[in-house]
Image (cartoon, rainbow, N blue to C red; front, top):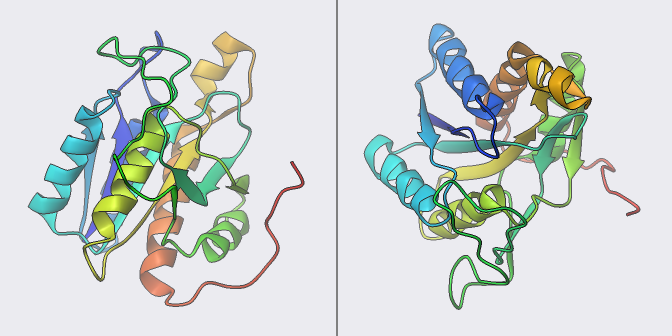
Amino acid sequence: MILLTGFEPFGGESTNPSWLAAEHAAQVLRGRGREAVAVELPCVFGRSADVLEAAIERHRPDIVLCAGQAGGRTSISVERVAINVDDARIPDNAGRRPVDEPVVADGPAAYFSTLPIKACHEAVAAVGVPVEVSQTAGTYVCNHVFYALMHLLADRRGIRGGFVHVPYSTGQAAGHGQPGLAVEAMAAALVVIATTTADTATDVRIAAGAEH
């Protein structure tokens, strides 16, 4: 079972392409004979992690692939690391704005994704969708969910998980004067990442780091 998640709209947006892409990707995966389900998460510190945990308990997935919007980025970003800090530049959808608070009290400083991130990068690039390995998932609700996911999976053997950021959709991009990507391309990337994870036991060793 593959569990995909995306977020509800936030920051004044009317849509969130991470949810649209996750929902579409789950449909494509089911059409290809794979068990898959999509769950929409609230863009709220704390509550988002609770909804994610409930979805994991309900669906018992083998793979959890969470997605979120990173407006201004130009590529699908396969995230490498989640850090144990909430530091919100803007309020979440419940008006909360934590500053320098841990995601999990007394949790480790960081967790690495357990997706085969390099193999996923290569597979997405091969289908013509712009992609990067990202070294930061920020400190907003996306990172909160990413860290909460990896903390949950640390005690659940056999489940792999990670986080992917998507750019603005093409419709959003036009309004912001920023780069954008079609939701269909985002969904295709999520499908490739999910299937690559399912079919890859050991990640490939290629350079995908950053100088800054």
